[in-house]
Image (cartoon, rainbow, N blue to C red):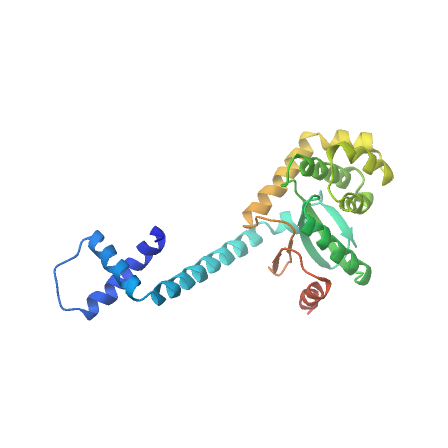
Length: 244
């Protein structure tokens, strides 16, 4: 049995058992655990109820921590001038988008976002590029961050060029950049700079501070979090709430 669960249940169950039993000598911790174990074997439904309660408690704690971090990191999330932007740079409807260029679910999410950008003129996508799926992802993220810094108006074009690849390889980055109409030599040089390394680390730190562990992930100013891909209709419903 899970020690954490047993330790959590022991005092609760013991209290209930003792309150219903005649007065007796004080029990040792090992005796209490033995009594709890025997009770759970006889009444396993108690275990199921306890697991549900623990999961609810963990979820509430995670939500509380997310809300706390969202408030503390609001400027980094929504007002960092070094992020890449898709859609309307001055749009009133903001979404923070954590992504990795070699994440297949991000490819799906990217298509959804592109559909909405065409339909919603006030949509501003703040992209937090990550490199969490290996060295190729790191280099692709570095290139995207360098573009956001050196050629922000062409960031979205490069983003789509990278997302169009089934899997981005480091060796293909120069070719992808040139085909997107950008200066690959200059951008790849910037991509190797300490400034870009620091920005990439900052994005990862922000990602982890929010309790996220996978891409894609969408964060809205009101605290709504979408961990994973969502279809167009699902995202439209969320945007309606953002407008109201």
